[in-house]
Image (cartoon, rainbow, N blue to C red; front, side):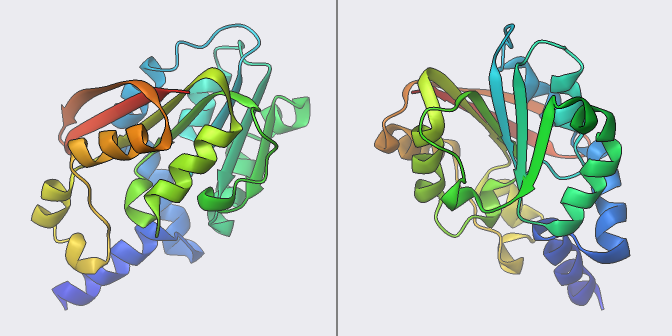
Length: 209
């Protein structure tokens, strides 16, 4: 019974759907607050910036970005249809005003022209990508020169302790993430860490195009 429940929760974390998926998305807005804050602090948003979040889930990090009233454009992409619906409801006033665009899509084939964004951020998505290097290459492509990529995640060690590697999550240690970013072409790579009761110790790695 426990393993079946773990498998169900892991599946919903990777692709939230249905009533349980929508409930989980609302829960994750609260549970991921610390990780969202750490990622947000690395953005250093300026007036007129263009910002993309990959895998926006319930939309709380997008809301935090939009509340600064600084970006020219904020875009969110998520491959889960129910995540799109939840965020559309939560952030409808920003969508109506034209400040925010949300769409469904995959991180390894970003539907944007080259050099579109000043910042790309993503939180707790790394584990679900079949090919992290392909995603990093896409992020590099759509970032403007001097643009910054921000990725927040738990390590493979933590995921193993939580039984999530056994449920199909792909884990990476910090040095592996940094090496993949360097292999892609990112410069000035640095990693910060945070810790809270919900996510244990987590990391945020940044790189400049």
